[in-house]
Image (cartoon, rainbow, N blue to C red; front, side, top):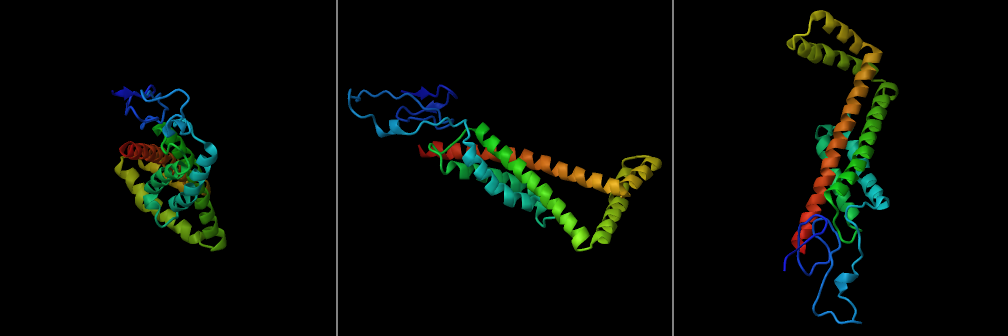
Amino acid sequence: METTCTRCHQTVEPDKGFCPTCGMPQLLYSADAVPGQAPPERWNEPIRDASIVDWKRGMRAALTMAVPAGILCSLFSPVSIFGLIWMSVAAAWAVALYLRSQRPAWITTGAGARIGLVTGLLGGWIAAAASGITLFVMRFVLHEGKTLDDTWQSVIADQVVRQWTQAGIDAQSILMYKSWLLSPEGRAGAMLGAVLLLVTALIFFAVGGGALGARFQARSRRSSV
């Protein structure tokens, strides 16, 4: 007889104690049950709501993956071009680490997305801190301030101004924006904006990675039951 989960309404095999999709405990009926006899072992499985995250373990898993991912995603990392991919993989991996100590070993997509969100928040701010520390070291410790300023002026003159000109912005506005970007305030504002944009993108992709990680784990669990 085919039964369905009372929460997500997915098909559950009659002899399974938990829904393979959301982890909801299911009522089992057996004609072989004898009063006073110990229930089957599957009835003794710990009951856990797969939509609830144990944040003690969740934070540990998220932090474990957020630190290396944040460093790899910093603006001055040699592999920062793949930063969004790193963060997505880190969030999915954090979900896998979290599930190693969980029984049943799966969670809902929403719970996975929440673990991904925490991983993205931690990783994003680690990436921002790593970018700021690297910039400080390059300017004040390694004394590469002139090189950084020359590079910034080249970027503004060769790329930004050309793009604005092609976009049809009038020359007076271009001159005003260029003067502001070349000022210390403009450089600081542009760098802050780039870092905030990076953090936002990393969080967004981490949420997606966590949700996909949870969904993948659910599919793996469903195929094994």
